[in-house]
Image (cartoon, rainbow, N blue to C red; front, side, top):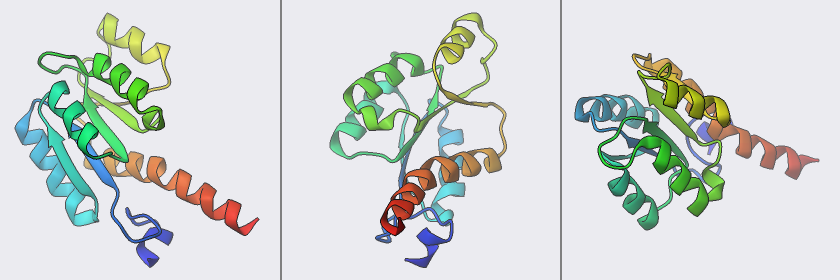
Length: 147
């Protein structure tokens, strides 16, 4: 489909990329969904780590927007669980946090190769990150086919 080839959020076969938003703030989940769905993304949401893990076990996501401070399992612990179970998600998870300077969060984010999107953020930051993460594999596949 042309939208995918020209920077749209879909795959080359025309199916939309699925984004999982994990945040305990229902209004933030709804706001992100209201921005991403009109852009052609398929959005799924979860309020905590257990719900997010269950959603991913039922159906994969192409990228995840993950809050650091979640009830129960933290976003940091959830990230570990996710990449151990689904290694292909490595590099496709962005942490959303207002606490990036807290010592434990800062150490964790410095330790790994994690994208951090500081709250409050602009929706452009989210859209730009998704475009860069989701188009890179598609671009590499296209270049490989044309080589």
